[in-house]
Image 1: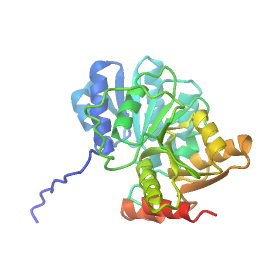
Image 2: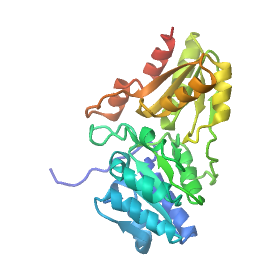
Image 3: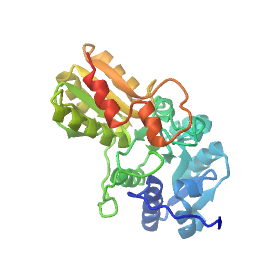
Length: 321
């Protein structure tokens, strides 16, 4: 009635706030860091950066294509551009990512905000296709941090690159509750993932924050005695961790991939390609966004519809034949 905005209190930090805070911290230490956004400064968390470093902040308007080419020009001139674009709208700049960044090997950090299912914004805004779209581009590195600390370290790693593009993708909304503020900066070696849980029978290979759902599902299955899946955070879609893939294909006959992106061509496609070439007897199944447009709804409901919640993951694994 008053028109006054009611403050919202979050149980964990939003990924967008982590991005904004860490970018400011990195920029305070490195005068070559610049921030670029196509009219999404408030949505992506770059308002604080704009206030702290107005001479190093560029809002180019709703022009994703120009945002990427402009970033490439800045990188060619010796700057360290962090270009933040909503995943769904980065598709407009596909040509520029290929020709102006990847072909030139320019050190541009492309931050894909709102990657995966976004909630009430619906089918036009779901960041469903970036994993499948960009992993085919040469010279490209793609990382999907699983929590706030990993995002902090991915941004730090991006500030150190000499060639690009270095693509960081993360979802809309709250993180996992990791103590990212007190965590020390650590560079994340491209192509190196992490085993999160030992197990048997089945291995779950994850990208991004859905790893927490995989862990919950694995613990639930182990508690009821049906099976005890191993869980791996692949961390990088490109390059893939070949050591993890070799271990998994040698140890397990069934591999389940889990990603907040389209199943066709993403992590499922990458793992299935590896298995087909190196371990044709291994069965690879995928959990992610199916081959259709997902209508608007609450983010949690959309993930349940696509089988990404812990209960659905456990149910799919329990019903494996």
